[in-house]
Image (cartoon, rainbow, N blue to C red; front, side, top):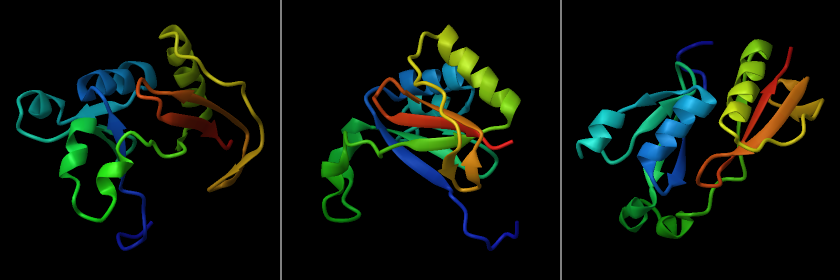
Length: 142
């Protein structure tokens, strides 16, 4: 992939408690928290978690909604999560994620097969919710 290719940089999720959300994404999902210490110290507005070397999920506190003035209607989006965010994983990481979620007693959907995505039909996929109700899908293609 070239440096000038279009890529997904980040997705912002509204959350009630960014520290609890970062902990969930770290322990149950296996993502690395970013700027968490800085957030706790009041030095940044929100923490994030790293999906891969190019993509992060920002964990924006609902209390930020009233300050969202970059475009009309932005404050009203608070509390309205996106339909879902899909994480594509290698098969072994998919199985490890499923096991971690079950160990943390996070409800997961049934495993589906051949659901269509960015790389065609996924071999297996399932969905789960984070503590704020945001829906995530996990899948693998090979």
